[in-house]
Image (tube, rainbow, N blue to C red; front, side):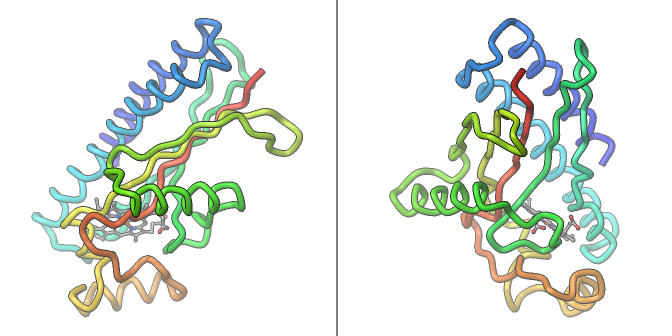
Length: 193
Ligand code: HEC
């Protein structure tokens, strides 16, 4: 997971630059920077999963799909705090359950995919109110790849993996996915001054 965090931090630096250049409300700049950051995080995560599964099998790799949503403090002001996480309509960890706004965006992602958009390119950024504060909320669809089926597939998931998942996640909804499905979304929240 170290690599994922490093990738995330490098991306965050780009993101901060986009915002501290006086572009707090420039959604285009924010979206571009968010894409860079999420791309690095997603690639690192997938590479790490692949290495671990090849080296020790999917049971040992289970804990690796837990992105420790890094909270990255801003460089200039102490209250400029990022939160990065993942969510899904069919989530595994209840801590990743979407809020109502995220649910509606995830549903719109499904509609966009059904209308022919490539899930790898589906994202959305908006300024919304959270707890009385204006925040920029970015979401990026996460497509399901072949490797993900080791733990998010259907009946083909190995029994020992199913057993381990049942132990940690008794109310797991994140099964039965196919390659190309939207597995969920990365989500980034940044307060707007
Ligand atoms: C080795 C097993 C394993 C593999 C392979 C795997 N995952 Fe996961 N995934 C998990 C576990 C376990 C969790 C719950 C992590 C947590 O507790 O936050 C999870 C959670 C997630 C979540 C967060 C939302 C939720 O359901 O809680 C997303 C999104 C996700 N995985 C996407 C993927 C994608 C995309 C791939 C393929 C690139 C993948 N996973 C491969 C085991 C796996």
